[in-house]
Image 1 (cartoon, rainbow, N blue to C red):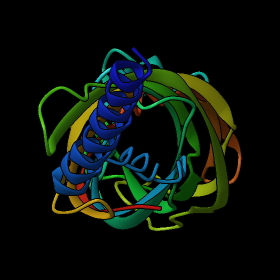
Image 2 (tube, rainbow, N blue to C red):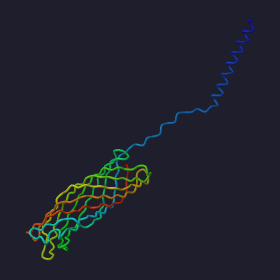
Image 3 (cartoon, helix red, strand yellow):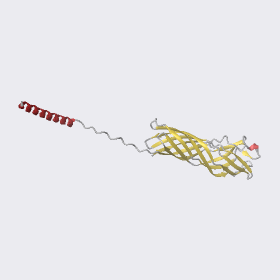
Image 4 (cartoon, helix red, strand yellow):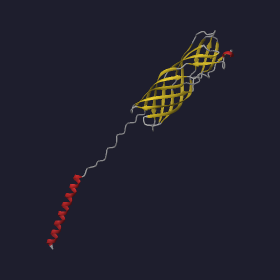
Length: 243
């Protein structure tokens, strides 16, 4: 009986040893899987700048002119014409989210004002505009590198360096000119086409509603006043840099 018990114990020890050896061999053959490292998260930078060539196209057709005591020279018989300009323009954008951004545009433009209608040919003068415009935009991000956007906001235009023409025409000479600063609304649409994660191309169109009051003096004594309906289109194209 004791001999049987010893044999049974020996067989059990041998079986355990064989099982351990087999398990070790299997473990050596199996590949070791490690948890993959988490992908690196690119730092979010909300700033973007654009440098554009901007065409400023005023629409002065509804401007009014009131020449004191001379209704024949006043509206609706006469109006104003404001020339187009091409300028460099810088804008700075801040993205609150990948879709929502605020944009501030900065540029200075100088315009030549002449008369229309019964004042056709009268050189009135020149004025310089500083029209900072702030818009809130929605950017569409589901078109890959093509990123269109729309926006709306406000504009405050400062008029400075006003200069009367002092050029005689048909017995009339504008000897003084002043244009008042003015608030206005703005809407825009455009797109960026990103060439890589930093650089891209931009096309942008804005419409401003800008109707400042002005005053002038003709022949040194005749007061003239009215509203200049500038209401420009701002059409630009340039480069984008995303930080």
